[in-house]
Amino acid sequence: MKILALLACALVGFGAAAASAATVEIVVANIKEAKGTIRMSLCPQDKFLGDDCPYSGTAPAAIPQATVVIENVAPGVYAAQGYQDVNDNHKIDRTLLGVPEEGVAFSRDPSYFFAPPDFKDAAFTVGPRAALITLHLRYF
Image 1 (cartoon, rainbow, N blue to C red):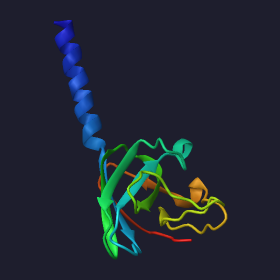
Image 2: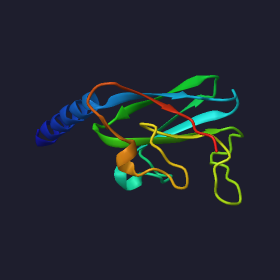
Image 3: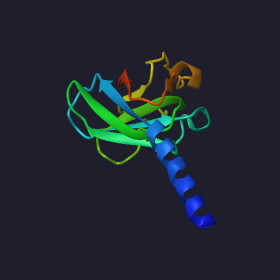
Image 4: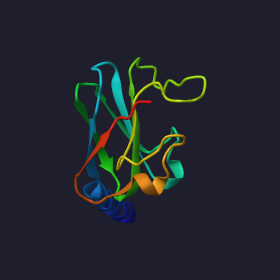
């Protein structure tokens, strides 16, 4: 009997957590060619600029924009980061100097040139409901 009560409490808690998860739609603008895949990630501060962000999604590249939908995002503060993977090799191609050869983007379109932006410049809040953000690919 106690096991059934614990299971019921766990299921109720799971339903509440799932109900508070949001869907984040990321409109990626300034796509220059309809080739490859747009890859976006949502990262908390400790994962920003890394490869292991907890939420990610993709969309086929399309001119002039594509929308990446990421579901079941827990409320919190995140920064979106992404790129157009023109050759679908699942990484940002770079020059010998480390400059991206493919378009890259961050939420809130922060200024950056010689180094990626700080988390605080790209951060936004995801609440319990759907969120929509727009960002622009930047080519170097």
